[in-house]
Image (cartoon, rainbow, N blue to C red; front, side, top):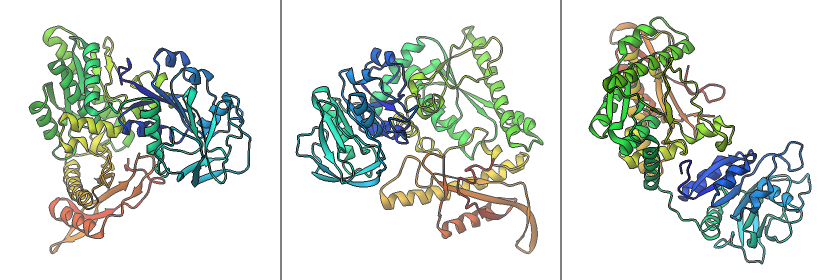
Length: 531
């Protein structure tokens, strides 16, 4: 899984498909390690580190369009099984001498597929007629020499083709999407029967692999980690604690901007449960002074980031002064989507995307990024396997500047206390609601039923009546959204009874609040966070 690839890997060659990452995920879900590479990756890198199998993704282009992605024909000559989807099938056919005529007749959405009366390894254990998902305009007109047609639809005469002698397979449809009813079976056939892989990429094997790699990289040197208490940094801390123990120092900076109970939980977990050096830095007063009177959100973010690095590097200097030995490595929670995004979908081209750390003069760390090959839900599963509490593993997305950007306007200790207490009620009640949904359905996705939910404190006050007195106090805005990837989001249709309970509790229990509102804006046009 690591860059020396001690486990077999399947590479997904990306032609700009909207499903590129999904293919990678579907393969990983079958406990086979997979990674995404760009179609223009340096072939020498692939040849030097031979994959166990290759999947060619779909893509939006026509194979004949100017500037359309092409495939180095040597990918098809490596002697490893290759499976192409949609554009991947077309580029395989055109590269090997088949034809892909341009047509005005496309095929989109569900299609009824009929298998041909020929033996097919890819379609083994699937019915003669089945529903698949199409999304194409061009399609293969004639197959290359040595290929046989294995399936068709009423619109697409050549919906799948195979050349078993060369281990080349392709479908015009998308097996990776759940609308293709037997798509998962086809992936299993390709991975386990054709490529002869084993379902051996499990959380325990990942831990063993990363542990071995980290120990080899670190030797007897020291590693420092800025532990925020978020999912990624917490899993890195747990993983490195497992791998190198006291060689790791976790620096936790309490800036006073975390949610209720979180600083205490971080300290408890990483002093009682894991064998690492834990440094707690109480910087609340320092941050309060730095943020005093600042209302611009970007300025808040800049101040908070700058202050963190000042504190962090000061602690690193103390570590070096303690025994005269410099800290060589800085650990970070980079995950695979960060890597893909940084490299414009070409993981093999990536250099570290964390190259903007403001190192002081004379200070330099080598980076360790043990999660850089994992997706977010894999990181969560890894954390659970390592024994992190569920409250950390399933922690919601939380902005780096913390509650400072959920307070509209200047940040004060009074406002932080109000927001912290109101937010705790929002999370407690929606946590219970999510758990109830899970008990009813038995299904819980990696980000929970309601994806993100929190309180916002706007920079206004309103008139209210509490008891026999008029009040002039703060409102609280509840924000709860449903999303998969935060690129788009819709407001959660929470039951009115739940919203009423949250509102009643906040007004009754949080001093300084006399009104509660619910944000029903989607993204776009809004954003999930308010700042």
